[in-house]
Amino acid sequence: MASYLQIENISKSYGPKVLFENISFNVNEGDKIALIAPNGTGKTSLMRILAGKDKSDSGGKIMFLKDIRIAFLEQEYEFDPKREIFTQIMESSRDFTSGLDQEHLWEYERRVKRILTEFRLGDGSRTMEELSGGEVKRVALTQMLASEAEFLIMDEPTNHLDIDAIEYLENYLKRSRCTLLMVTHDRYFLDSVCNIVMEMERGAVYTYRGDYENYLEKRDERISNWNANTDKVRNILRRELEWIRSTPCARSGKAKYRIDAFYKLKDRSEEVIRQKSVDMSGVSEGMSGSGFSSGAKLANRLGSKIIDCKDVSFHYGDECYLDHFSYNFSRGEKVGIVGRNGVGKSTFIDLLTGNLGGYTGTIERGESVKVGYYRQSGMSFDEDQTVLETVNDTSLLNRFLFPHDMLNNKVSKLSGGERRRLYLLTILMRQPNLLILDEPTNDLDIVTLNVLEEYLKDYQGSLVIVSHDRHFLDRLVDHLLIFTGNGKVKDFIGGYSEYREYIKTLEAAEKSQARAAEAASKPVQKQEKVTKKKLSWKEQKELEALEADLDKLGAEKKSLEELLSNPGSDMEQTLKASERIGGLLTEIDEKELRLLELYEKQS
Image (tube, rainbow, N blue to C red; front, top):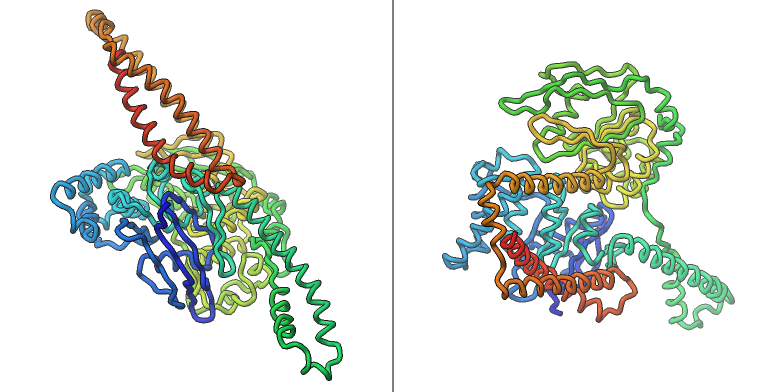
């Protein structure tokens, strides 16, 4: 198996802050790797170094396999706001398209147009300045996917995408035979697409083959083993300390190598790995001087009226974002809001909170309601203030992964995820009994998300969440308000996965009914002509062979997936399975397509 990327001893620091130091790892052909690390440890910096937009402080080596096509997706896509979408993609792709002959250039253009359509971006004639953040991300992804590069390197590809776009990208990458290295916080996306989890911690890289749950389990084992070895080192250190202290007058005659070894042992004995997590207990239980109230007190302060909406409509120009909407939000309920980019989810939140007027109908807010509104773009800090000056509570800052040595860092020096974490803390400190979160998962690392989920599960106030993170929604919400476009909103009881299953069942039933209605509406003589259509003997045999082949291939696929998901599998077998499964999926797709053609011919 070819090595697509070899990284040796690269480092990055900003002032006194070391992001990573002398890290090394390989990416092999067929690997689909999710890179995980806490915010502020340099994931984006690493991606920029790989893309050639930054350099390692320590030199080191970054070696890509010669002649493979590589495509990078950075968090921020650079574009000319005046260009049309299609022109922007073609201009930004010149490094890739410059060597193509006319036939291959036309093929690339066709791929661009097809993916634009599948991403719901039309014919690409709109200008870039007209697009939302999610649409800009889809343009960047179109450019990447159309290149059909062998190696994709992606930094948070699902940020700002709506769930439909995420599911399209997920299915594309699952079927693709590309090699992939990506940073993501989306756990469903990670488990569906990736076969390896790679963790950066304490200047080292740890690789775990399998899904996210396997990563958590194996990581716990690694940390337990490390700390157990630390205990052994401390026992040895105690004996060596007695030796060092004995006969101090004769110390100069003691073996120098043993003295050097003692100090190395001392350094190692201080290395204990503690699981970093956001401890929300101070928020829910109350902290002296912090002004925090318990979840029960939050609930008690809420009256019976939260927000009542009656016959609310809102238009912006020719666009209808809300059409005669009525709903009374209840005390203690947890509501998820979902829908495609641009259908009005954030507009709806601005209406609820009173940040936007110009609507018809009535929106009444309870007198006891105190709103905490976490916005997508609502962070407003004094960049010259320190972390401690922004939130003057060291206990709470420590609980939110701001250790003592970070408290005097200026806000301007924080990573995107660290700023988000600080912003979240400033909102919770206001003691809201109605918490509204607009895309809270963007830029937060998985560790923070897991513990935030635990806090929100126990939160006793009312909760409204706009999110594209399916795992986040499934764990937290009681029901969904689904924005379907043109101002229409549907209420669905249950989480997002339940909703998707419902939609799939509904769509299958509708297709079946449509086929039945179409068959019933055909004239009798046409139906007779259809029934006389038969497969040739050769086609019948082909159909039977395809059915048998697909049964075998399905069984092989299941066996390979079980092997790949088993962390105890033999490495050589696992590598072979990883190589085989990409070709297997392609073979299944081709045979299923031919089978459908034969079915349609005989129907």
